[in-house]
Image 1 (tube, one colour):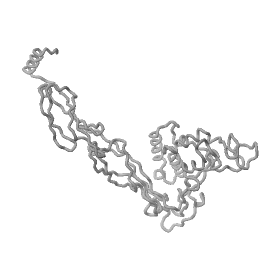
Image 2 (spheres, helix red, strand yellow):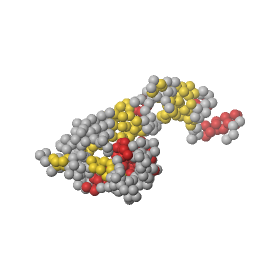
Image 3 (cartoon, one colour):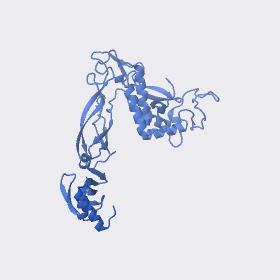
Image 4 (cartoon, one colour):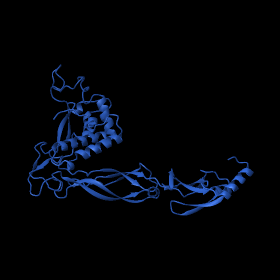
Length: 381
């Protein structure tokens, strides 16, 4: 099973792809190859694992940076073996003869290599691919699926705070088989593919790294008869309702993490987390400028010219009255202190922006009166 893989090629994106482009590519491919949509298709199951493996690295900014640096330095092709003044150009096994072809002899261990200032490659590969001595056993409890989602919220809820119900799709442990993937009364035995470890090794430029076993899906066991509820997957897609508390003063792209609100844990493990990214919807009346709130108020030409008093509604649904002095131009702003957004003990103001609306239709008498006014005031029209 030794073969070299390019995670960018796996997701079908360039190595200069943005985080958003990588996420979109992963979601599209994961939906296409998800086991739920391709029941009994071993090839799609294998492809799904590869896609998940690639996104596990490229979807994490720190892991991606390490991966890119190792690619640049030839970690998936040529290596420089530093301890003991080893060879350059290709990797050579610890027991290889001088001049032997690259890859001959005993494959080197991760910890024997050092690239730049990154230290032992074993630590890097273990952190990126889940391999090494810290690998979790298939029988140990696992934390449930952590979910990331974007939640659209109304402007006024974002400003004042509130509660918003949301329904999510999560992968959760199958309740019928308790995550084993086995039908009731079925014989459960150690997976012949991985020997019960739940993971198998594959070659990455000559280096062995671990990944979940595609036969047992990381469980380490296989059943003589699959659970009918989850088709042997040990988990199923479920819908979960959660009420989200929106903090006052929330702005677009703000994030919150809700511990234990993700998918249920596996084999008694803790529940995953729910990460919410807020997107604030525009409001027909209000706009935000930091902690200040802008509201537009239409006045007619007489009110703007002669002066008047106008009233507006605050975010708290209180009506306030402000004085418009004579000769007020359009787009002039008036500040109402303490009626903006409150956050972290501070509160902004309400900015009332006047919009002068001239009449669109005039009677003959009204037009003549305007003409006389313009002539006496020396205004050109």
